[in-house]
Amino acid sequence: MRRPRPLLRRALPALVALTVAFSGLAACTGGEGGTGNIRLDRQGDLDAAATARLLRRGEPVRTGGEISRGGVSAPVRARISWRPARAVFRFAVIADGRAYRVQVRSIGTEAWLQRAPASQGAPGAPLIALTPRGERRWVALPTGSLPALGIVTPFDPATLLDALARAKVRLRRAGAGSVRGAAAVRFTARADARTGSLPAGAQTLEVWVARSDGRPVRVNLELPDGRIRYDLAPAAAPDVRPPAPEAIQPPAPPQPSPEPAGPFTVVTDGETAGVRYRVLAAPGTQGTTCWKVESTPPLLPLGRPGSSGAHCARVPAATAGLEQRVTFPIVADPAGPFDMLGVVVPPGATLELVLRGGARLPLPVVDDDRGFALYVGPPDPGAGFLIVRLGSETAGCAPGDIIEASELDGLSRPEFEAQRRYPWSCLPE
Image (cartoon, rainbow, N blue to C red; front, side, top):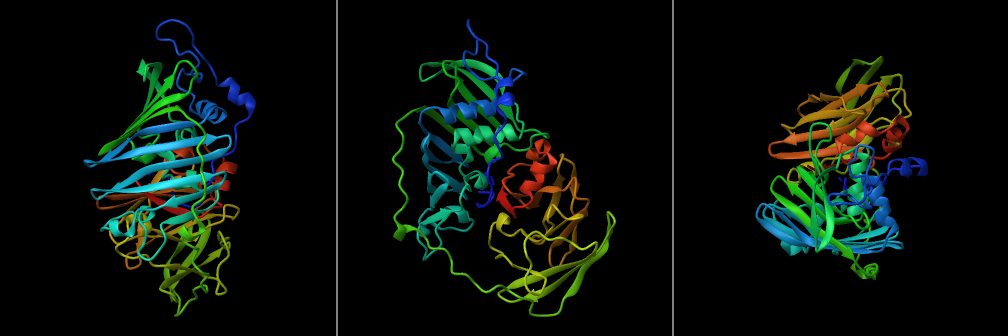
C-alpha cells in the first residue's frame, strides 16, 4: 500500500446512479448455503460497491485484528462512523523488520496522521510513518486525501470495498461458516494479470459477510510475506477530536521558487505521434534541475511553469525509498493536443508504462546521466500508471487517486482526464 499515493491528493470517484445501484443487487434466501441479505451482482459475486454503501448507511463499527510481515506483527484497531463521518485507525507500517505504529484520525474531510517517534528511526524507515527529528509527531493531511494515500485503505472496510469495485475485482463465493457465532459467507479475490495487485500488495483477499444483514464481519488480506486480518463488530460512534494544535507539525514556510542557474542543454529530441519536440535541462537553484519542452504543436503543461518557462524539480536524496526517488518534471495537461510524461528515476531502474485501457509498454531511459525517461503519444489513450523497479524495490506511480494499474480498465475518458489533472506520485508496491 494507495498509494498515501502520497499521500496527498486524491478523492474517490463519483457516486453511481441509483438505477445502476439497484439493478446490480441480487439476493438468494432460504436453506443451508443461501446468502440471505448479502448483496450480489449479476454474476453471483459479492457486489463490493453495494456492500460499501450498506456499510456507510449503517451503524458504526469497530475492528480488531493483526498485521504481520516478515515475522513481525502488530495489532490493528479502528473505530469508524460514517454518519457522522469520523474514525480512528491504529495500525503499523512494517519495514525492515520493524513495526512503526501509527494512528490516523479523521473528522469529515479533515484527517491527521500521528507518526512513530523519531527515536525509532532506522535505515529504510518509511517516511510516512516516522517523525523526522525535530518535528512534531502529528501532521495534518490534505482534505479528502485518505483514499489517495492508500495507507488506510486495507484497514477501512468501506474504502477497501470501493477500491475493489473501481478495479472491477471479482469477489467469488468460496464457502460458508460462522464468524463469532454468526452465519457468514466467505468471498475471495486473487491478484492476477488483469487486476494487478490487490490493496496493500495482497495476493489474495477474503471478505466474510453476515447472512443476516449483508455487512462484512471479517477481512483477511494475504501478503507475500504476511497478512492483515481483522474482525468487524457493531460499536458506539467514536469520540474523535483533532490533535492539540501544539502537537501538529506546522506547514513549512513558503520558499522562493527555484530558477535556472545555468545554460539549458538538449536532453533528447525527436518526432512521435505527429509531435516534434526537444527536451532541455539546466542546473537550478535550491538543488534542483530545471526542465522545459520546445515542441510543435506547443506542449500544454499541467500547472504553471516558473517565470523562466521551466519546471525546476528537486533531486531526491539517494538514501530515500524508491517511491521518493521518482520525480515527474514534465506532465502534459489532459486538455492539450498530445500526451507527454517525463520522469526521472535512480540509476539502474526499469520502467513499465500502462495506458488507459490497460496497454503496457516498456519506457526506456533516454538519458542515463540524469535517469530521464520520456513518453510522447496521442492524448487518448494517455499514460495512467507507471511501474518502476530497482533491485528488490517496486514503486507504483499514478496521477490523482489511481492506486492500481487495473483501475485504468474501468475509467471512461472524462473520468481519466479528471484524474490526470492531479499530480503524479508514487507508493511502494
